[in-house]
Picture 1 (cartoon, rainbow, N blue to C red):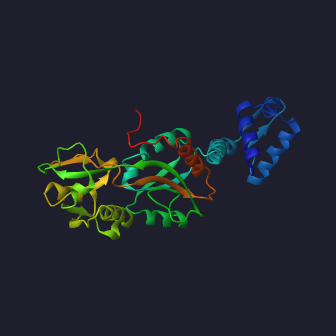
Picture 2: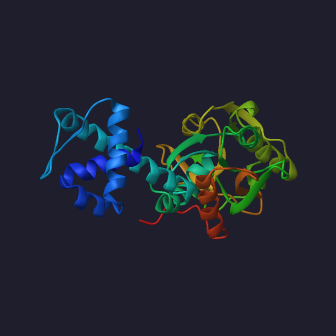
Length: 303
């Protein structure tokens, strides 16, 4: 049984006339009859009653008609889906992002990507460490990522999204909470709230190295395994917390954010993906990111 034979039977059931059915199918009447006969032989039953004046469906033909048309419709949908996949309009993509990407440029990237790939399925994973993201890209666990650094440039291609800025979260009552800008040097005597290095070594090292470059070793007073936990500690007066400026929009009772002098910590967010991939939907995402290179910001997506 072939799809073409099902199509011939379906059209014949519509027309109940060999001549009209053959014309619609753009084949000869003899070819139509031959294909119908082959279908009946493969099914082991007669589908059509032929007389000199008219044709009609047998009981078996009437019973077979609806599932035959459902099969044709399913085949059409499958073909359209495959066409969408090959064009990058459909498929599955797994993206891993640091929190700075989740609260920064990623929503706008996804919004633009969905315009070009409306039926794609996106799986988004939150990472705390760029090293883990790089490993996930190389092993195929991630198709793409937003991270701060990549060591293996031979296997991973990167596109710079933006130069990152940072803020300091203070308790409301802190002497610097009302400032419009603070420098890292002013924070040398403060107690710090971070997460343990094994939760996110790249960001941990970024903060520690920046403090050392400014002549002091930060006093880490407490650890929080999430941003929410860290801000709770800040609100409780335990210490201060440095985070990406993409988190500045997060509100927490008892906490205020103040921009950090952009000269004090230098970091960038990058979009990364394997240099070799077979997925058209990944290629479409790469195209979207490349088209916006240099224009991605921490702003919210356009309405």
